[in-house]
Length: 393
Image 1 (cartoon, one colour):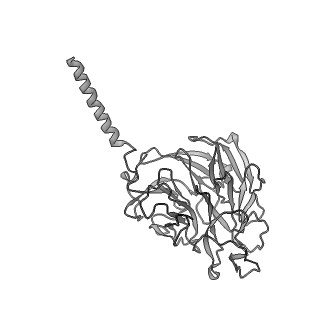
Image 2: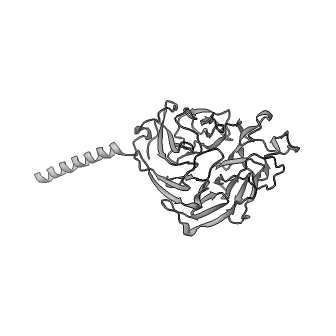
């Protein structure tokens, strides 16, 4: 009996020690900001921390899988903004709850030279290249692309030299898939091909070239469809429209809308170099100063951020071509019903640009765990920002 009591005491003590150790390292109770150091030279609000997540060449688009894996496109084709050549690959980052995530090469090779847009929908993984959208079978946790299951979803080939390869993808709440097709500055009014400078609906039941949704766009570089049922794009305006009231825009995407590029600067504001009726042009929901160049954007939606940032709008600014002036990460409060910013965006983080610690911001995306991720396509890195109170799950 005496030995049994001793054994029980030892077992209880061992269990207590093990429990203490689990509590000490438990990702459930640890805060994201508890480990690592803030990025030197970058200033965020005092209740937040900023960490470097990983290095990756020319990261352009971020996509979180249902299991939390982060996919990143790295195009090798040169971008109009002057980013260095990437890897021509799709990378996958798996957060191991340590200081360094594990990186896998999900896809690579000549086929992925111009890879850009990424999307997961149902059991398929979609990606864009310069002239097409493809999909492959996918299950959460896959570490390598299933090339044997590749299907061509849309033909984006264009003969015009001013067509861009930097497409983006999104899935709306009604299940349809949207792809953006941008163009560089030109004066073709009307456009010789309405599918250049448009948002298209693609997939089963649609024209292989895509069915027109929204037209008259210059470069809807990023699309995001939100759970409240609305899809948005950051529309880049004419580079030479400083003197005629040109602005960059946040737009809502609706069937049969036209934004008039390059014929119209805005509703009832024709391009002074062209003759056009701009009375039917749709007005943007929010504007940014010309040359701020909004890229990726997202809304906080986990309710894990403190006020006034809870539910707010965040956008990455690529900055002015060549100088990177106004590059950064900004935010604005929103109308709770429309989700549209109620004021001009202001700096959420500082320390960007040619002389900054971080060069330029490309995509911006909230992770399922509440962290705000963004990538620097010029500097070749991914970062995240989180409230100091945000706990690991």
